[in-house]
Amino acid sequence: MPRTPDGETNIVVLTGAGISAESGIRTFRGDDGLWEGHSLEEVATPYGWAEDRHKVWRFYQQRRSQLPLVEPNAGHLALARLEAAMPNGNFTLITQNVDDLHGRAGSNNPIHMHGELRLLRCEVCGEVGERMEPEHLEESVFVGCDNCENDILRPHIVWFHEMPFELERIDKAVNSADIFLVVGTSGHVYPAAGLLEIARSAGAYCIGVNLEPPLNVELFHEFHQGAAGKILPPLIGEWY
Ligand code: NAD
Image (cartoon, rainbow, N blue to C red):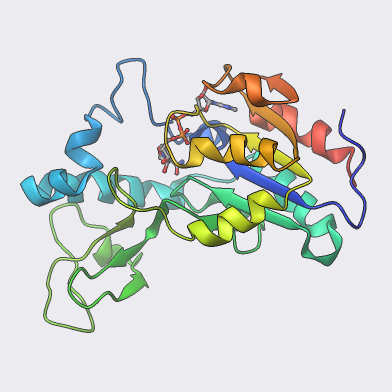
């Protein structure tokens, strides 16, 4: 067991699609290897977007429209409580998730390394903004930029072959972690999957929580197999 964190303990958490599964958002890899029936090449690469904007837009509009219909679960809430109990801001939450459930649970400024469904981005002028009004959520109508002439904004999502956001900040946090807690991620998607190895090499005590053993399970000092909403509240509730 990790030592009970005190005021000096730096806790860094990495979450993936599994933490939102109990809220009703499907994880990335179905048993069929598809994401909601689509191949990743089709809907999660710049090539897919260049090939068929209507298909990619419809896919993300469906994910965006789902957000108001789902609620944070016990796992999101437990992490928000832990953060609130940590003195001196010695807590960093990094998420691969593009949903907004950590923020709505009360987490302060999580690092969304793969982007956010709530935001759209202009590929011409670079403007990024929240576009969640009903007229922004229609499947068959593109949303245009307020700042320039471009009439097709893209999802503010990091696709395969693109660089995740805030890597420098993430690297700094992971390298200074005393406890590195990884929840609901399969360990398939890099560079996120490599953060565990970095944290472990830098001396962090590494704890995993996942429904099934992830690819890199042997790197954890402690692994808890099961649903995040059941395991996290008692596990981290002991820390504060
Ligand atoms: P993944 O789908 O590859 O893996 C999810 C993992 O969560 C699996 O190992 C599964 O066993 C585990 N899991 C499922 N239910 C769980 C539960 N209740 N408690 C704990 N673990 C559970 O997801 P990933 O590793 O995060 O990589 C996928 C990529 O997909 C990310 O880049 C992310 O941006 C994107 N994505 C995000 C969302 C979201 O925002 N909610 C949903 C789907 C995909």
